[in-house]
Image 1 (cartoon, rainbow, N blue to C red):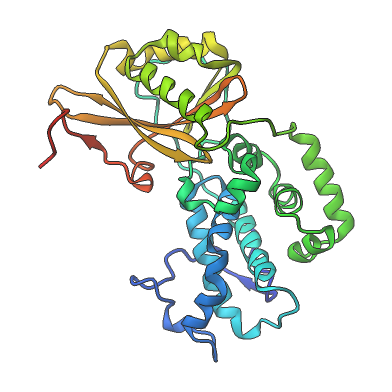
Image 2: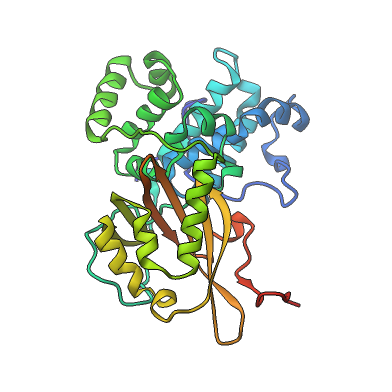
Length: 350
């Protein structure tokens, strides 16, 4: 494995240093930059925290990895603050560190093996490649980018970025999403404008045009479709759920590779999941993920409690629901503030 490099300082690094912060969130004393107090550092960097987290998430696809990369970025910036010569803005300097940290993460990534699917599923349309993909709560995304570049935080786009070579993904995000110039991107990546232009062209060729019309977040159209979906799903009414899908809809379920395309395939899959198959009572809790409605799904068990079965993220197009993405509850519910169990209706868990 090639050594990591801090592009802001030119020093060779040792890769991830996850957890290099104190328990109270303060920077460790050994990393304190001479002449820079922590309050000043926070005032300089805090305005960029949300967009840097969003950038790391785009690059890595995993919220766990994105948070680690963000912490490494801030730690590297803290350590290098005394050497910051203001040849660029603080924002550009932070993006240089963050982008190169993400590239290091992608080169060094070790993916955990995936356990078998816990129930019998029909043969999928295809097998996906991005097993590490995770949803991101809207509250953790940069709100400005959700408003102005909504497609760039959708799950489909995040997954497509993971399938690009790392530097192509970085160039595409920096140029087409964040609006850096070719010269700025070349400087951020230690490359040349010619190389950046070539990488951008290759990335664009590999990605189909990812854009389209969506109902505005929180609009009556979005709320209406979301409410109809929730009613149909809680009733385990496969026909009603399928009716809300577009003809080209996809259902995915990271970390499992199974992907189902179209109403018929998705309907067949839904009929086989335990909650629908066994006619269990289902409850949904509404949240938002990746700039779209999402739901914490629960089914009633023999003890009367509603146990979490998964987080379901929906993507809405102009003609209905264009994508459903299901994620395991244990590693995703806490990030969304969702409990892993709900009491029987009309009672509370003691």
